Length: 266
Image 1 (tube, rainbow, N blue to C red):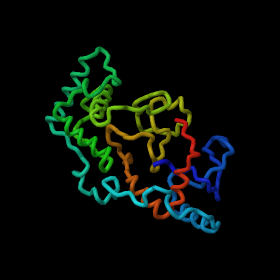
Image 2: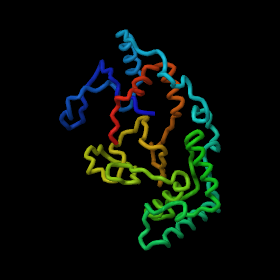
Image 3: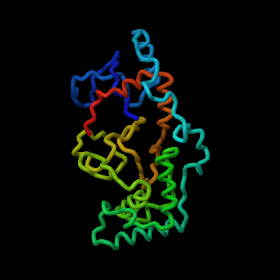
Image 4: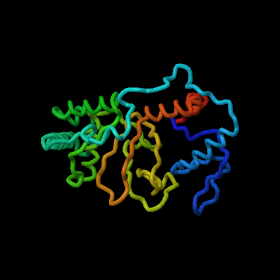
């Protein structure tokens, strides 16, 4: 689902300014905080209602009023972690490590870009990962794989293991940034990094918690190398449920998102 933050309504707009910096530009921006505030949202709804705008009260033509199916879910449906966690057995781990040894034997300098199903063979586990792939693409849309201990492996081996396993789930990899990197490293940073060149292969550029957002890819995967002493949790939301809520309460927003005037320059 596209982002809806480029709203045209800016009744309490403000300039974007960072601590210790001059105003970056003179663009008027909507009153949407980094972490969205429900109170701000309610105030915006009241102001919009007072404007008596002639907004569409139905979804765009040929658009569904409700999306049903496995991708439409709530968190309460997954209190039982076995519904989404795939636990690798000792035999599975041994097979993964054998695939790592095989791939490294193919070249003196192992290149993650050369990893695929053939160069990282998982003859037994492949069927399990194929089911995971189907669940991600056509089912509820997410899964958690557990069983590897990253502390056992070198930094390079962890990358190779990560790319090797995911090759059996979604083999075509996409660029993570404008420099063409296929992998970026998410780490604890002590201060905001606004200079793109300074970021290097690391993400995010801020030490603040990330709000809900949509990543620009079909499938996003993450490999956890360690557990943070505090924070670091990831939350998911059903895009179908988000759509259903918008269609029910603010169908006019769907008309904005469906407008062909959006500029896509990636």
